[in-house]
Image (cartoon, rainbow, N blue to C red; front, top):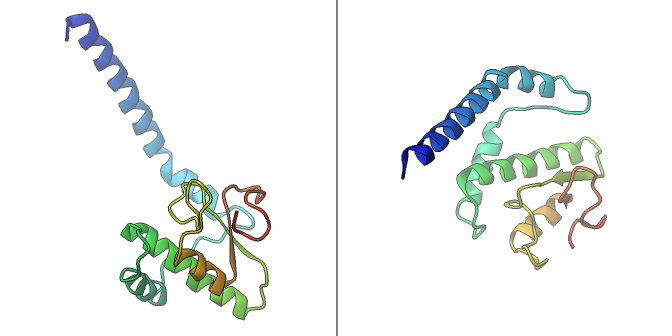
Length: 137
């Protein structure tokens, strides 16, 4: 790599480092805004959720441990909300790991069955328009 290219790369990395640093400096502020936003409840993983995450780890879900923990929280929380009388529970999943369908629309089992048993509809967007109301494509 010549000197000009090297300088360009260093400049780009410096800008990237500055941007990441600025975002990290605002992280606590942004989390506080999220925690205090109407309609959003931030909750820690309970012992029941952690136990469910361990149970999920032996199922053939092809999920990383963090996604297993998120799924466990969703399933346990959905049951608690149903017990309180909720009848319309949805998950908006943007990154795709926890969606019960693959990239071409095929159903991913046993993930789809877990959501169905919990009564959770899964959407690919926060407008809750995609997929259809049934939660599967």
